[in-house]
Image (tube, rainbow, N blue to C red; front, side, top):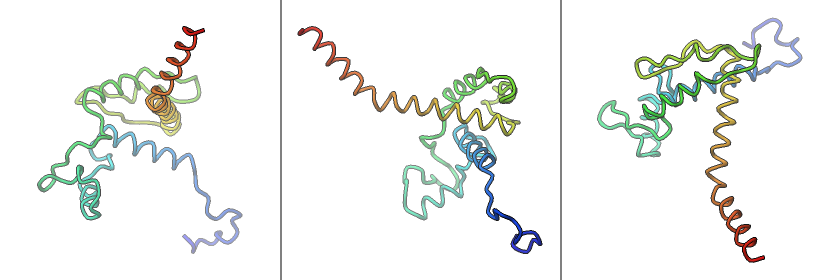
Length: 157
């Protein structure tokens, strides 16, 4: 790469394409969550690395290549719900392709043929949903305590 004749003339030599990086990360997360064969990053080699490092013992291989299900891999019924949700997501015209065409519900379900912008917008929707769900779980206790406090205050006054 450094032997390119125009390398020294570039104003920005280390130009990272953020959108492609985001797409690759999103696809890797998506295929790992869905446990897509040949596309997941949760491989036997990854599990062996965990064993070598002595971490995440619950994810170590059982026998030669039997992987216990990881907590981040969707169960079949959750995978089906997720894919049904994805197939119903609608984007504005011109922002992303019809994602329902990329969902295949047969044979356990999978996603294929995702276009660049579709992956990015789809992942942004997923990130937003995940953030909302996380916030709801984390702060529901505090919210309920606050509602209880206001209810008690209103009853007393």
